[in-house]
Image (cartoon, rainbow, N blue to C red; front, side, top):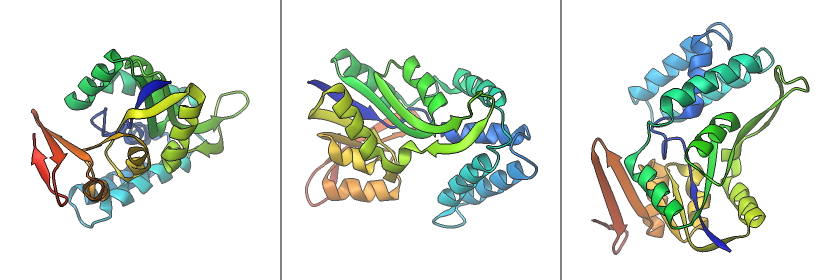
Length: 239
């Protein structure tokens, strides 16, 4: 049984959200219908201004709504062309800590997994570029002639624990000395599963969970990486 490491992608390896970039570009090109880009832009600005505690969640929901409301009109050709342009631009825009951890674990023979809420087509290309062994992304099912989408979907971030357990079983992987790294609350189930969880640039909910469980926390800001090891009484030591 091989050791494994499981990575989130958006905000953990890639410095921004691939799902957001895709929808933003489709909306800006008027592929999602009139007014969608303006609604997304307004929601993003409310988040950037930190107008409320849930402004980022509201922005994410606007992104998802804008994309899914146009599935019956969007062609796969338009979709795939923008996918390729995003990968070309963003595939190397990664965090140093995560990129180096990925390489080091690969060199040690770890089986590398990626689980992300971003579209399968994006995650597939990123996973192949960084030599992951297996991956799961969100699937928006294409219709029979592959020219459009039929409305059926599988959102990988809705149950990352189930996705991880399925992959562990499929590839006969060992939990012993396993690693997991993520940046948000949807990653908590996979971090609870592995031996070596890392909360990377965590949001508030992940940070509080990491403190409660004495998980390692890593912050990468500008050209600095701060590694925080759990000490005693939910405190951390900078190493």
